Amino acid sequence: MFRKLSTFEEAKKKIDEHFKPVFLGEEEAVLLEAYNRVLNEDVVSTLDIPPFSRSTVDGYAVKAEDTFGGNENEPAKLKVSGSVNIGETSNVKVAKGDAVEIVTGAPIPEGADAVVMVEDTEREDDGLNVFAAVTQGENVMKKGSDLKKGAVVLKKGQVLGSSEIGVLAALGLTKVKVLKIPMVAVISTGAEVTEPGKPLLPGKIYDINAYSISTAVIESGGKPIYFGTIPDDKTALAKVIQTAVVSADMVITSGGVSVGPHDYTPQIVDSLGKPGIVVYGIAVKPGKPTTVGYIGDKPVFSLPGHPTSALLIFYLLARPLIQRLAGRPASGMKMVRAFAGSRMFSAKGRRTFVMVRLEFDKDCRLIAEPVESGASGAITTLANADGFVEIAENEQFVDLNQEVAVMLFRGLATKT
View (tube, helix red, strand yellow):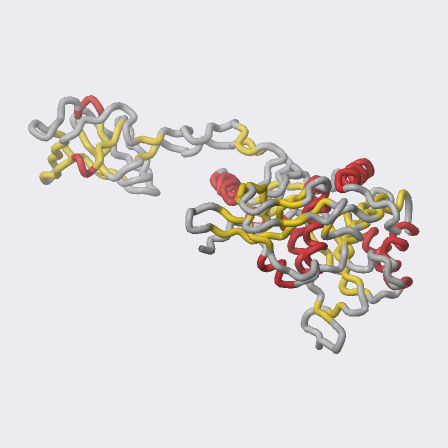
């Protein structure tokens, strides 16, 4: 199966050549369920925001010209003729020489064109001393100054985060049109794999991959469909993969891709439809046994059973396809620069990805320290690694204190 490995770049090229992103359709999502979804329409403001001119401070609404010349020694003298509170419409009108008490967010009463901060005034019954002059429009947020009626507020294709959801709420919307989420079938294989929650018999291990990969699918903008753990039975596995292809937009399996007598997955994928397997192993470490196929236009990623290898290859190869199916830009992983904490060696002839944790040294330099895993399947590697350093096929090693690019699985570590 792995007589001719693809280089990492060749593998990516073959995957892209056969990938045909399709429009999965749209649906309406209620606002609180639209977070992290991809907008499928331009959102046009149906009103001015704010819908009325309002005060940005606590103080007094005035005619700005009435405060001119007011200072600490000779304050401008006005008469308090009423008040206006937030959430109400005031019938008070501001005439020349008048001041109306107002709170932050309350509508500016008719006749006023500025607000004096309460700190710059002194009240004497219905009289008001103003110690600092204001200019027209000062401390006033004008109607429509944030959003104008008819303006395009959000554009089709935007990913809706918390701020975008807030904008939609400000427009009074309760639903929004979004792209459908790509369904990704997740299958774990192997006689030794047991679902969490069940008794762990001798020789068995709990299923790590289905949960780490399913979570990574969600992070990528997809929705995982967990098909459970399938033993190394050719007939059973073929049936499940066939069902998964029909039920989902992409299939991800883990385990059963090496050269053992029960590693059936690549053969099954190749037999279920054209073009079949397009990548038969990749010259990388970890992740060499990875195979990728297409059954019709459905991608099938068959990842190694080792948890670290499976998750790494997912991030490198499967994640961009899920993002594109979801209508998102295929964004790369976040990167930071750091210094190698020790020498990192490559695997001869293979692109090597060294798992590292990040920490700051006494000189506040960010250090990338290789995670001692012992094997690509070590569970603690998943928890301890913040990211990885990539070593090219023609590099022998990365030296101590050499500056490196670290691709991040998550945010920076804060250990010292």
